[in-house]
Image (cartoon, rainbow, N blue to C red; front, side):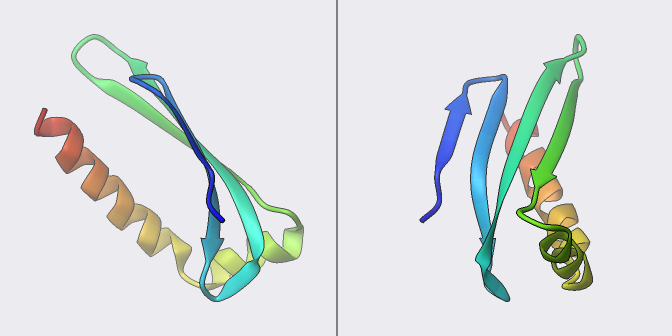
Amino acid sequence: MNETTVVANKRIVQTFQYDGRPNDVSLESLTFEDLGGRTRVRTRSVFPSVESRDGAIASGMENGLRDSMARLEKVLTSQ
């Protein structure tokens, strides 16, 4: 079960499960900082173990993260 908390224009916190490792649930947060015409986005992922983190990295998660950031950029620039 995924949980998500949103604070408009400030923060998103959610749990994340990768299909390849369904028993490893990570906690992810995104914070948004207004830089006056630009926005800084910071992401943080906390894994239940080093092995879980290493498994996520080995799975190619960075490609998925890049795709997600590109989609987020499209959403934010369309508003």
